Image (cartoon, rainbow, N blue to C red; front, side, top):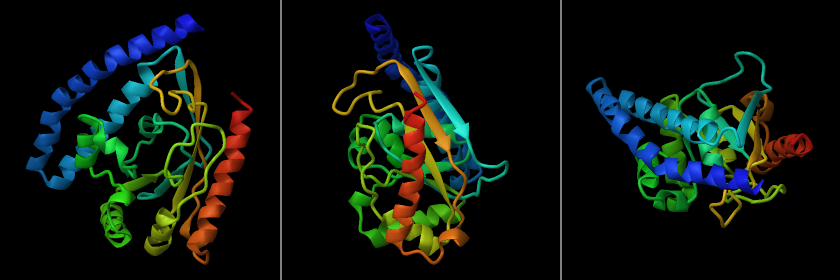
Length: 249
């Protein structure tokens, strides 16, 4: 196990920076060419490139010592566009795992990811938002503009990664927006990455990460809920599924 852990970390971190630079060099001209069509097209390409980058960095690079298994438990065609994706939050690697989706999306992040060299700059440039950096009214307006453009929003309403199997309480901002904008919610459950890496460490551990995309919760199902009732309703759905997933690892 120690040998696997050493190889995993050596390969991952020795490749991480060169691959990041390669992606920026290769895709920047392609994204900039999109400006010839429109700013909107350039942003669509930018977010697509970020999704490809995430798939290479976390779905391919750590193989075979770290595997990601994605299971779509929704019915075929059950992908509203746009939507609000609600995820539990165990590790800093959660952001890379959002590459599992095939639709255009931005993430709601805490302040610290914006401070990561280069990646933080690119995330902000791609339209990623921090609810902690602006009044709720401004945040809601920005989210509404993105949703009107057909861009989905991915949120981790615990606010910070738990680092353990237990799930924290949900904050209500995104659920207020879901009600105000009448937007469907897609729950995404993540298990197995609480030590990939552990909170407060960069040390990656071998193993398997499970991602379960659950059926969409349509606006019609929660239109009479308060934000408080809605956040607890979605939290209960995710908590039940993650408990089952933890027994599968």
